[in-house]
Length: 369
Image (cartoon, rainbow, N blue to C red; front, side, top):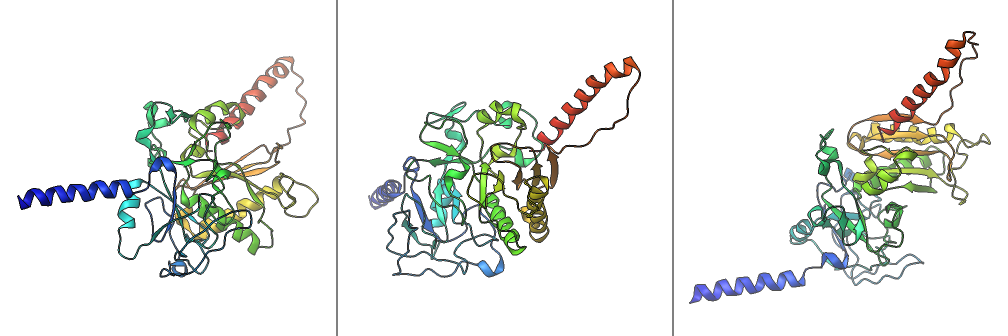
């Protein structure tokens, strides 16, 4: 009889705990201390999380409304990661449950409008990849990742994402790092569909913050770094293939972003080197910063592509943390030989050869993206 009662009590306790835990569908945000998962950023030695501070109050940004009873643990730089400026953790529900139960951890409800600038981290519980039904998740079209189509993967970096961050009108302005918000990384398609879903890796945020920091340290005001393109659903990535998107683009895996630096607030790349022009030389300065960051933090190595052709924002740079080094350039004009071909046959063949070479040049960089 006692055994039966004990078993019943244990079952009841588990049931109550399950009810008390946050619902994934509610897209709640939680502020707590500690490292979340393999997706989490590493901290440098001088950015180890401090002990929790009780009884304090956190001030929200002027454009946000946020209330908290306790101030979570903060680092000397107010955030996590090698930059000390990452304010987000993206975890699966089981990771949150296990980490929240660790001795000394503190969990408190955070405002849906975003975490205050003083929080060490804001935890987003993700929807698992297994909840995706064919190309869809909860009415939002995602499409199919390369592994779903049975294609041979280039590396482990191309496996299916673990899960998806649910984005709603209530949490899209949540600050995920010092300079970026969740909405900056949302795929550009399905503008009227809610909720939306995003794949985003913390190391990408860390690297972007370090690049901004490096440029500032080298006399280039990079506070206006903007995300031109963050996460792309595979469906959207396929739709823009004609615009240069690679079939297996890193944008689909949440660890890539196309960025430019807008110092004037006009939505365009700025003249970073002060020569009166906005061109390849300006976007090259972003590459220089990436090289210095990767040399200092090899764990953030990845791809960098320079796109010098004009668009709505002008030149921009692709930055990712794929785990292996890759570099490419696209859109830089190269002067052609002025040699005159007298042969009619050679002249006739020249356009076809030039077209073939041009096509090859266009495809090669895109395959790296």
